[in-house]
Picture 1: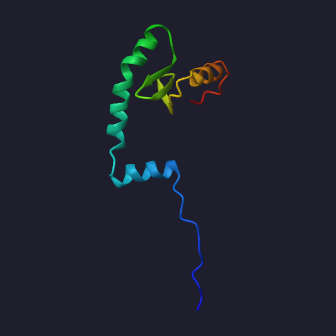
Picture 2: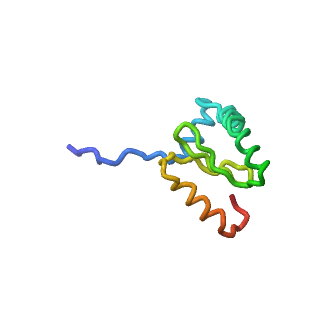
Picture 3: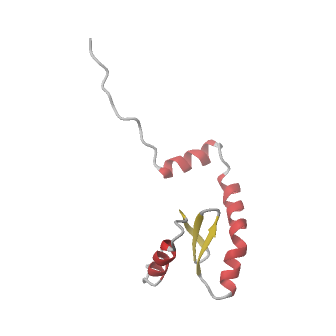
Length: 99
């Protein structure tokens, strides 16, 4: 009798998970995008009013990183300013136009 070949379970990338949630209809990604944009809008507008094209928004234990009016990432707030230091370092680097 032949034993079945054991294999590792299929891993799901974050990208694939997001596409599945969006395309299967399980989650309305555009509604979530609109809600998140509205939630960040006041802070981004305040930053723009004082000349900031880049900002960090701390809320509910998360740090929202906004650059050129685009939310580029969300990271946990470690409470030590680490993300602000990294953001400042990267903000001063020349870019190739990509966000």
